Length: 365
Image 1: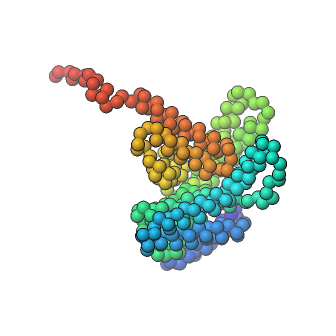
Image 2: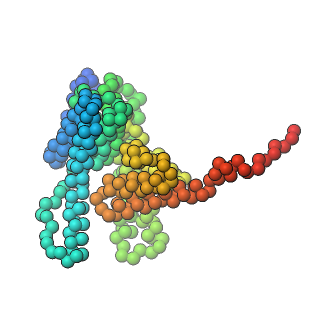
Image 3: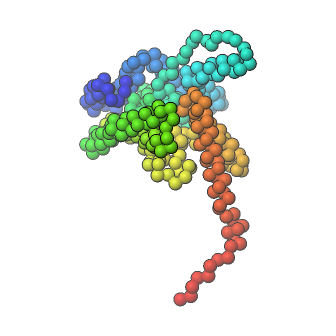
């Protein structure tokens, strides 16, 4: 189900009217039901995957807390099953196609498997969100929850389910557990977010997308025409992605839940590092906290830091899509950050140089 469809409008309005008549427990029951209807509307089998993810991570988190001497085993249970399902559904076709290409290079003949895996929408987002819960429990940053209902509503919360932002248990789950009251001011802000989101999607993104598609369809566009297409695509991708975030935030706010801001004017960034502090913030911080920092972050010298940056961005590229273009995209952005860091170090005077530099004498009164 998509936001700009009559089905969603009906589901949203009806559930919202009922929602504010209920107590907290039944509000969460309704959220879970609506989320499963939203996610399984076209392909009901998607629900088996998200239910399996929820059950595994709920059980793993409880096991980590109940049997601390086996906490690492429960963490591995969560990591292997979640990443295994994500890897199978997202990268199976990519793996088969590349193995077939390698075989053809060596002259080996044979047919590819007839099985083609259909990618469940949103699996990358809810897998990372659910994983962050078990990892945070393992790191003792949040307690394991006893209520399966609350955890299930947290994993499947429909406004941000298929395209983010990726929320943490320390932010979203605590809101699922807390009492929520209807607020006229919050409803007004929510409506403005939704309207602004639809404007960016339908008026800006869809129209500049026509320009970009026409330019990239040309066989030999001129220099200025090509750059016009590039700029149009930049506007399209930002307006489209941020529009979804606005609609998601507005929809969630109508239910008394605040989702994080995912974009902070990224095209006003002053450096590549600053750009990634502004673009898809929830994903950037997820990779920072659960990949880059566990690898060692900026500790252990500049070479190790460069390695950690490259690994993080290569994985980020693969997360975005099962395609070599995304791997190249990750390599490019990782290398750009590494080069930026090297330039910054070259232009920043060392502490010894700063101590040796003569101090300007202050003028006498």
